[in-house]
Image 1 (cartoon, rainbow, N blue to C red):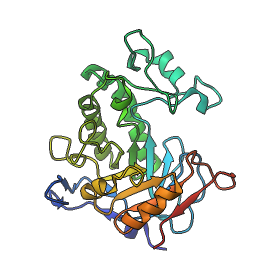
Image 2: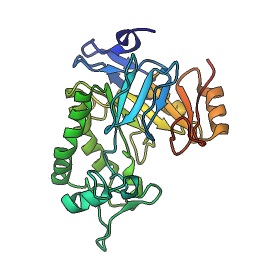
Image 3: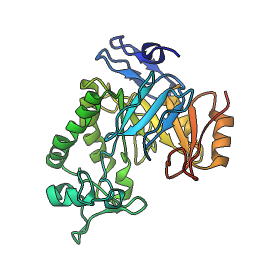
Image 4: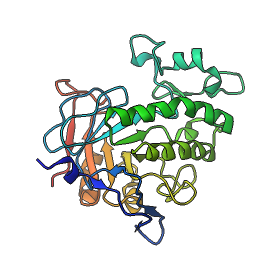
Length: 293
């Protein structure tokens, strides 16, 4: 077993650049003290509950309400920054962070359509946050900045901000520019807190970050790695790999797509097969596999 220091890459070189291709941006290396995940490290994606990482795991992702994994692994804190947690995900729908909680405590921060109804991500039953104005972005961030700080205090190494493509589910009420402006706050604060931050999906050039994810904050700062879902199924793995070489961590939910991704991209990125519900060991639906190495 290697030490934690040996399994992570410390960012120590001021203003050095990693240039990945003529068509993509260059990602700056910071001297602010945060570390990036190990190159091509094996990921254990644990949003359905925490369990002992399987042997050979390098990176563990857990919800911000959970504790980081012990041992020499790189811990990533999942933060749902642009959508609520569904009421049905907990026993008490009024629990902190659910749609009901936001509606009771901060109703103006939830996105509503012309009829005044909440805009809902129907697939996951999550309400979208309204980040359409600077005032609303600041108000939302006043709450979520504490989440980021708590991730750092709990001992996580990085955060995974989810639903950064929520503009695609907003029925035209949010633009990618709105999302980008909010995430500039999140990225800067994560780095200031000593945390790396990953791009979660949103690679589309028209509605997402395209090739600018690593430098979208004033052209000099951005995401440090990528956690993506089904880049094999959607033929996007090469796009992410061009921006974050050796630091793309893909989760596939279909065995055929997983096999294809391993065949074509297994030497470039880290790929994991998981069951869609992200169940825990012992559950009949639990699946957790990696490409052969």
